[in-house]
Image (tube, rainbow, N blue to C red; front, top):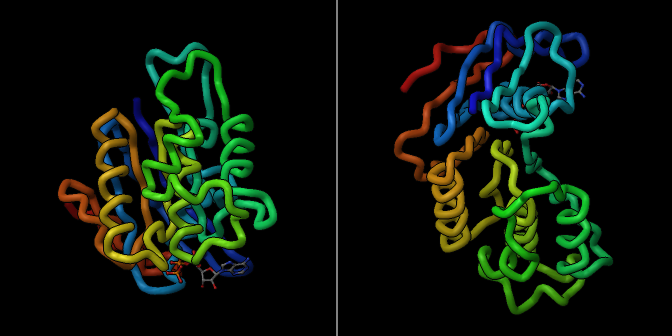
Length: 214
Ligand SMILES: Nc1ncnc2c1ncn2[C@@H]1O[C@H](COP(=O)(O)OP(=O)(O)OP(=O)(O)O)[C@@H](O)[C@H]1O
């Protein structure tokens, strides 16, 4: 499996935010985007997730065993700044919706809704409306969305914002486990995620992207 970005550039409004960004990630690899506010991390993640059209360049996904060809976006889960949950529905209803929405044939790696809620440490409150949960609990539940349907690529924008130390550690464990299972992770973050082998891409904004460093 390989996710490849080739010579990507992107524009927001009139401004060219970055240009010539290239990288390739294989199964088990992760890339952490760093840089100050407004440097283009979310923009790059949204391009990879297929939510924004790049100004130039392309994103490709290669999976040797795939039954059919898939776009990178279809191989990805995207966790943005917002949690993508309905506040008036219960946590179980929200996660069940996402499980059905994303479900694929021959998928034996996805967790049940109950297992996913347990995995983020909130098994006891899945009956509550999502809107009743605290900000940190909501973020944990949003993360559980990644677990109810297997996708090889996780695209995470500030996944640990609003989280306490124990939730950060739960997320790090889940991300490491995903990588160990052959997944790929791209994450924008201001806080270290504790991924020792992650590569780093420093974004500087306005088309000045620094070299990728190990
Ligand atoms: N819809 C838009 N129209 C015009 N400019 C935009 C739009 N969305 C974002 N921008 C600009 O693009 C630049 C990059 O924004 P982006 O959200 O990618 O930064 P970021 O590195 O993720 O920032 P942060 O760390 O604050 O989340 C910023 O200067 C921002 O103001």
